[in-house]
Amino acid sequence: MMRCCLLLSLVALAAACSQSGPEQPLCTFDDQGRIVMQSGDAEAACVEPAPIPTGAKQEKSGRLTILEAPLPPPFSDLDGKWPPDPVNDKPVLTRPAVPPELSYYIRAFPQATEPAGDVLSMGSEHTIVLRDGCFFLDREGEDDPLVFFPFGVALVIDDEGYLAFGSRYEPNTMGSVRVGLTAQTGWYSEPSDPDPALVDACGNHKVVSVAHVTNPFATPERFNPALRRYGERSGATEKQIVDRANTCAVEQAQREADRRLRNPSLDPLDCNRFWAF
Image (cartoon, rainbow, N blue to C red; front, side, top):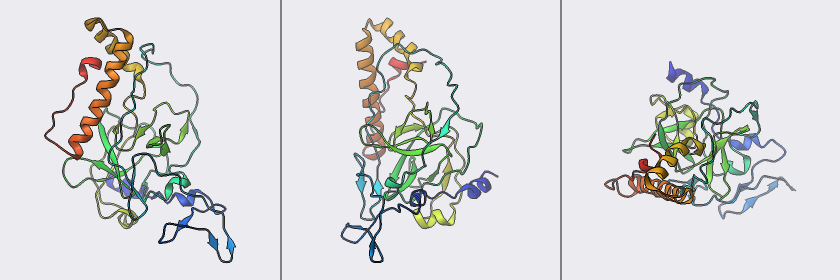
């Protein structure tokens, strides 16, 4: 049943140029990398691709590969409350899944056409990477599946220029998480066969559908009680607690990338002494 629903929903293959409207098509390029802006004998306005995101590799195809990204320090203070105050504002759809200026770099962004409503969401975490314009769930082995995204996920450029998964909604309470970093994905489906259009774009790989793509540190306040307990045990000041927890979190993310991409025999880095629940 899930396979059937997945295939029926698999329609938005990140041809985000279609989202830019006929008035401003996405610019195309010749074999020298120059923008082609001619339509017949008249110059046609077009949307120029955004600058290449920080840390991304542009393939010969023009599409991007992003296999890892640095984690920005997630903690700033210990003043937040848990549980946080509920958000009463109704989310408003404010942006396309793939902005036109980013669509040149992306081959496909398969996504549900409408919100799924309440879904089973567990605390599963996985890394989603971009390979030559296609998004894969990076797992052990060589058979990584393509990712089918829920309706609310959008591609954004964060404050430091990295390509990230954000939200199509405003307000966004879940933060953004960079492509190539571990994200909370919740429950995901069993691998299923891809839609023919996705095969044309990204090759014949299995597909998994994730429940969401969110930042594990989007609400640092939920870590604060454990961080305070660490301070009580260690005698550390608040600044020392925040600095040490940030250092460990950043180093842990880098170690995970090194284990995935370079040396699987490396031991994982354990930061539970700071935020064990």
